[in-house]
Length: 432
Image (cartoon, rainbow, N blue to C red; front, side):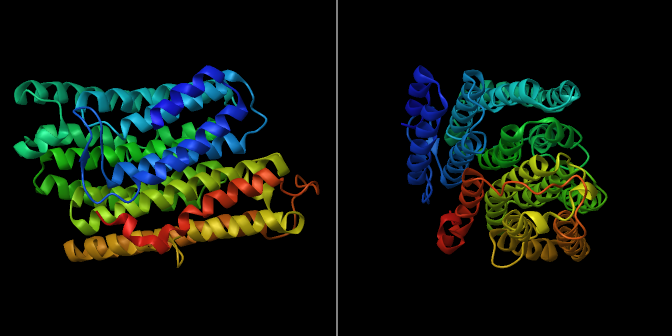
C-alpha cells in the first residue's frame, strides 16, 4: 500500500500532492511499528520490527523535507524525494538479497541528484564523486559475494538462508561488513560524509543523516540474521575500532568551525555506537543500536534544519560569526538547546537509553573499551555544549541582524522532529 501511494503520486507531481502523499504514507507506516515477529508476506517482501521502524523513519523524514522547503516547487526536486522515499521503503521491505542490494544502491541516485542539482558550492561535484567512490566501491565486492552465495544455496531469500544456518569464511565476513561500515560510516572510511553534508541542500542533509546512514546498520542486521557470523578476534577488532573511532570523531567535532561539518562528525560518532552494538550481536547490543538509530535519525535531521535556519538569519555557517542568536531569536535558541540536549544523550531522551545499554555491554566485554566509551560519552556532551553556547550566547555578531522570527512552518518542522522522540514512553516498540 505504501508503494502504491508513491507510484500514484508520480501522476500528479506538485508540492501539495507531495505533502498529501507523504502524510498518508507516514500514517500508514505507523502500522508497521509494533511487530514482534518476522512476517514473510511472500518470497520478495517481508517485514520485521527493525524494518518497520526504519520505514516509519523514512516516511516521516521525507514528509519533513517537503515541509522544510516549501519554496522548492520544481517537479524534478519533488520527484527525486518521491523516488528516494520509494527506494528506501522498498529496500527496508525486501527479503530477496539481490533486490535488497539493488534498492540499497538505487537510494544513492536521487541523493546524488539532490546534491549536484541543489547544492550551494562548486565543490558539490567533488563531494558527489567522493560519495560514489566510497559507497559504490565498497559495495561491489558485496554484490559478487551475494551472487556467489545465492548460486551455492539455490535461493536468494533471507528467511531460507536463516534456516540453513550457512557459515561464512572470514574473508566474506569482512566483505559484508566493509560495504555496510562505509555506508554507516565508521571512522576511517568516513571522509565522504562531511563533504557530502557540507555541500548538500537542506533536504539532502536531512535525508542523508536521518535515513541513508541507517541503511548500513540495517544491512549488518540482515547479514547477521541470514548468515552465521562467529564472534572471532577479527570482529572484536571492528568493535574496538568503532568505539575508538567514535571518540576520535568527538575530538573532531570540538575543533570544527562549520556548523554542518560539526553535525556531520557527530553522526560519525553516533554511528560508532550503532556499529559496535550490531556487530556484538547480543540482545542488548541490538536494542541499543535500534534506539540510537531512531533517536539519531530525528535529532541529526533537526540539527541540520537548525543549521539552515540559523544560516538564513546570519548569512554564514561559520560558528564564531553566528554567536548571539539568543538576543534576536530566543525561540530558535530554545530549539537549539532542546536538540543539543537530545544529541548529547541528556535524560530523559532516547539517546541516553541507547548509550547506557551499549556502555554496559562494552564494559562487560572489555574494561578498557568501557573507559573509552565513557570518554566518548563525555566528549559528546562537550561538543554539544560547545555548539549551543558558541551559537546562542555572547555578544551578537555583526552578521546577525534582527529580522522576522521563525516562520510557522519552521516551528512546525522542528516540533514534528521532537514529537516522535517521545516514543520513549512506548518503550516496547524496541523489543523484538
